[in-house]
Length: 249
Ligand SMILES: NC(=O)c1ccc[n+]([C@@H]2O[C@H](COP(=O)([O-])OP(=O)(O)OC[C@H]3O[C@@H](n4cnc5c(N)ncnc54)[C@H](OP(=O)(O)O)[C@@H]3O)[C@@H](O)[C@H]2O)c1
Picture 1 (cartoon, rainbow, N blue to C red):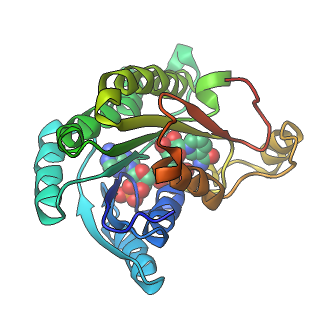
Picture 2: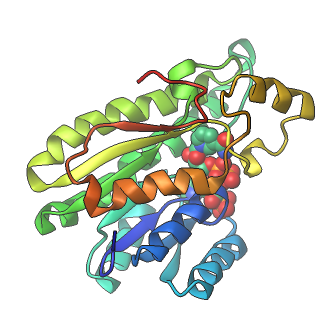
């Protein structure tokens, strides 16, 4: 299971699912780049947790939607750590609202971070992976990209878009042994879902065969597997981590 000698970059590694992914990859031996956009303190806390657990890492701040900033930060990180071997496109935001009232700015912000961000970061790391004839790109989509959700047309479009993006990139990079897969979490307890009322949470739980919301660690385990050597023959797939809420593909 060892990722010893590999370097991983986790966008949005400062909090929630991203933090758990950083800990998971570090526990497997990777040196982990903890990305954040505004919350440097949280990113430092993630790094402290990584090192406290005996792992290695570094903090790198940039906005995933800003191509120039991504290129610069990835270039510097890759130079310091002999390339980026594993990229987890995890940074994500929501700007919910019914379609009829949704502002262009809310559409753009969600598409820019969740979808364009995966494009900018993947583009920045792919050349190095292709040269090394090894790489893992893992995109964090969502059950909402498969089921849809009233009030989240922007988020559902971005997350569904990530699936087609991943399949296409998987085809482009396969000959160089770079795999591209998605992990699609269901409802996970993080800051993103913390403002759901008790009633809504109960309604959601009623739709989950396993009966509970998931944890960031549940998602991180799936990412750890897709980053590992054991998953070498898996590409263009989506691994659903949702307690059985959605069982299609
Ligand atoms: N929670 C769920 O139920 C759930 C379900 C399905 C899918 N997901 C997906 O899982 C991923 C993580 O979600 P989460 O619940 O852990 O979210 P979260 O707790 O709200 O954390 C979001 C993370 O993304 C970072 N981020 C936001 N915009 C960014 C940008 N433009 N550039 C770089 N980093 C940015 C944040 O950095 P700062 O700390 O600097 O703000 C933070 O680290 C997202 O893609 C989300 O859509 C979540």
